[in-house]
Image (cartoon, one colour):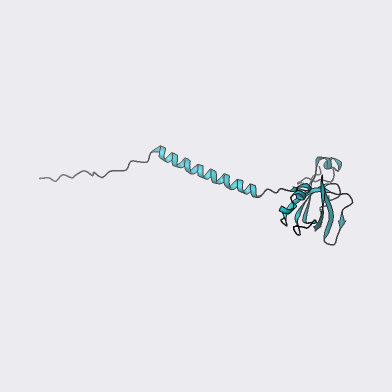
Length: 159
């Protein structure tokens, strides 16, 4: 008598369906896209540098304290005085002014009646003098029109 072999009866898993692997791939792509968007938006938000105007600083002086800020205003006429460590001047806004004691050399275009942004802080919560570590000169279209040979483009050409 011949022994017949029994067929293999263990169940075989069906191959993964195309729709299941497509859904998985789509989910991975969505997660990656969200991660990239989150990283980019956080990087951009933390690298934005805002400034406060003279009037904003005067209105919220207590909340600013001694934190480093960027103060924007116009250099008051006849207020610039060179010192051994930098420059003293006054920045004004529509409703007030703040004396500035800036260390270091001011930019070449620094002068009275132009808008500037000064990076710095107040010495104490009650101090009225702003101590600056950097001065940035802002150029308006009117300034460029008035002094066409003073403003240089990044490539070195004169505007």
